[in-house]
Structures are given as structure tokens and as C-alpha cells.
Image (cartoon, rainbow, N blue to C red):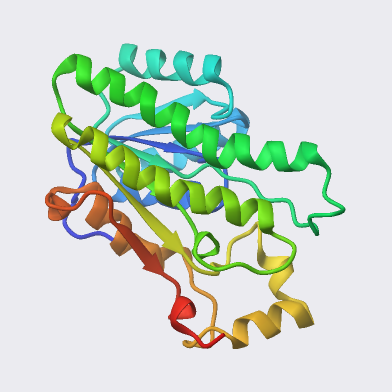
Length: 256
């Protein structure tokens, strides 16, 4: 989606940008005139993506090695960003992982990994950037990627659902605290989206059954999140903070 370079002049950080929704959001930002900072642990994939983003029209592309679960990594990344261009205007907390498994059989290490990336990562990145914005006396925009599984539950993903429910409440809590500083914090709660990471899961009888429960009777596509992201990342949402936008084909309003 390109609505007239809606992010022109804005510098935007996208975490977890090496694949899936993260790389899609990076391409969206580039097409809309942003200076794009892409962060992830797999920098080799980021380097290839950077070339693509420049071809799409990104004014500046910065590649950052970033492990959102590590305080040291986050602090170093934000310092590097500050030293390589204008301050950030927008942060998209997209990095996330999920391990499926029934709770009684799931190793505590998997639970810890999910919470560390999906929740601790959002906290670390958000607070580190917000400190910088406050010190500079400027506002900013944070968009967290939550999930409809933060609202409803299903067997086998209790840890993931808990992490995303926490992201929803963290979004609201930080929005309340930081409104006085001109920092807006909102979230997108996607439903089931077809990406390279999830494609195999849908090509099963169980996956087909889940799709049938979506009122619109199909999976979403990454570009169907574009409108929500551009809304929240731009002044079009200047009077929105603490909001959660659900993009799920009607899944949350389906019958139990």
C-alpha cells in the first residue's frame, strides 16, 4: 500500500525484520518514503533486505543487529541508531516467537523464551527509545504487534497467548504513562495471517478447520495489515493512544 508517501521524513525502527511480517512492514515503510531501520538477530538476511528497501525508495536504510530479549543488545542498538542519523520517530515492536505445546509437557525454557522475546523485548525496546525521546524533548510513536490470541485462547499455545495478552495491557499502561511526553502507544492484533513461517501449518486438516471458523472464510495476507500500521504510525491517528486495532477477518466476533 502506498498512500502518497505517508511516512516521508520519518525514521522508523522495525524489530524482527528478517522475515515474515517484519520484512513486510519494512517494505511498506520504504514504499511510503521512510528512513528505515531494520533490526533482528539474523543480519545476513537484513543485508539482503536492505538492498531491496533502497530499490523500493527508502531514503536511508540502517541495519542493526538486535536481540530484543537482551538489555545490552537493545541499549547498543538504540545508541547506534542515534549515532547514524536523525532520532527515531516510530518504533514497530514486531519481533516475536511461539512454541506450540500443551502446558503440562512444555519445557520451562520454551515458556521463558516466549516471554523474553514477546513481552520483555517490547518492554526493553519501548523504554529505551522512550527515554531518548524524553531526553530530547520530542514525542514519538510506538506500534506493538499483539495478536487475537491475546484475547481468546486455544489448546497448545497458552504461553504465547499469555505473552500477547500482556502486550495488550503493556500497550495501554505505557500509553497512559507516556501521553504527557507526547509519546503515543498503540497496537495491532492480527488474526491468522499467511506468512512464510506459518504456511505449512495451514496446509493440514487442523489448519483447514481453523480457517473455516473465520467469518470471512480465509486467512489474511500481510498487506491487509498495511492500513492499520499506516494509520497508527502517522499523524492520521494523532488522537489515538492505548488503542488496540483488531485485523482478523471477524474471528474475534465468531461464535464460541
